[in-house]
Image (cartoon, rainbow, N blue to C red; front, side, top):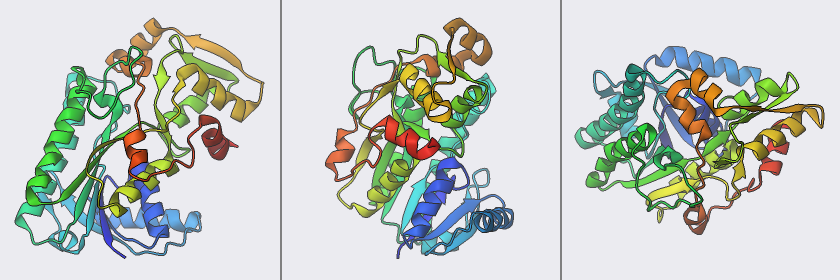
Length: 317
């Protein structure tokens, strides 16, 4: 089986994707600033979860500041999955934090291009993450991949991110960019945050609750990356979100019902309060974004979880 190198392989998405690839027999290389420590954590996690991979996993050093990736790792790689980037929702958006978010994406892309253009390699394709943060508020519109980037922080960050990886096309590498919707996973991200107040019997509806949320089950997300690896005809930008978008209120109440049945109280969290608590980041949780995923489906990809009810049932029970 081919070897897949992953940047950002220790994050929520990278960890889930690694499991999917290993179960299907792919060999994997995870880039890390501290490969020995990362390998130790993986072994402990695999033993705890009784995970038995079919493929092999290796760890290699990289350093975006020194612009280096282990040359042997690049030489062994058939496909690159580029996920690296600071978490958008981890900290309040100060001027410094916003620059860290942008630089973590563009500098890692520039490092990949540098290594692929200067080191011997057999890389066939680069599958890069992007995000539906590319788009602005939908105002009733359904966004397709042809719509321009929004002028706001996330829109311009996604634009810089995609432009920074575009250069690998000059090396005759197939490039696929997947604009990710809100990933639903029990291991981190939005779903974990939504579940916190529900444990106290409260379903916290954000703002009006009418804003549309383009979401995707973590298993479908991982399957889409593997589909992009295995489909030579795929090239360019694809929206990766379930075909059935839901409102924030529908998603919140669906999570609450999955966890507590009817034993919860819906409580709206006013927009002004979110702005006080979250600052500029509140724009994103209050923004309505509806994206069209028909281009991805036309490439031969089928969602296992097209409806949010089935996704939540699988994730929560």
